[in-house]
Image 1 (cartoon, rainbow, N blue to C red):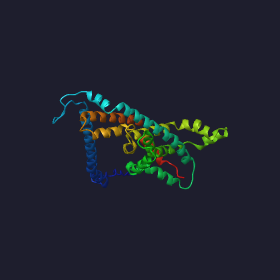
Image 2: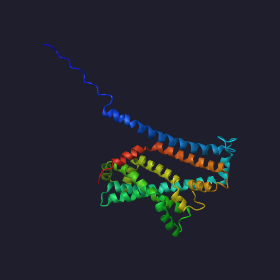
Image 3: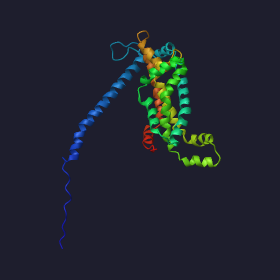
Length: 296
């Protein structure tokens, strides 16, 4: 009996629809990557020019300064009273982080463990200070704070920064709390633990990663917050970003290299905070936790 050998299936032609789509998509991808590279090259050029200027002695109509020195950093430290400004920045940031955690973590626990009408509306209200530009609610907020004599002092700066920071902690901590099995709390209550003991000794150790993530993100946000701090700060309550703005507006009075040195100090501080934040916080995990939030 003769056996018939089947020919292997013919390969699809090189001009198949999928192949044509991939070829057609390549120019668009190259354009997108070209725009991205162009943007980052421009950003790198701006940062590099400020960095070089902060070390340059004289720089007029040449590619590089005539000489280099570190004296501009010492002048900026003295002229802008950077030690006091950094102390105020740290004080405001620590107070905002602490109060945001004290208020936001219990509120996140209530939202994660309780179901009630209007819960989604409350989440939407918490999203508004984060999604809206701070200047839109910063001006009426500053007006109220000035009316009660709180603005112009550190208390006003802290209260203004709490408006977006507390919702940020709540929205960050709620998925962390929802991932903890409620049966752990039930078992602790069966053993005689009260609500305070359950929260401090059972939940808090499990929530340390989320609390740390929220604290670092709020810290970065507070140090970089300009609008709310600018509207409510006084002469003795300016953070580093507000002091940098005032130094830039006085660039015709002070040397440009001194202003650039202050900008480098602020940028370095923000980079350190971002590196620390990325060391302990994975943004993709936060996004995944928000997507996996159960329906109520």
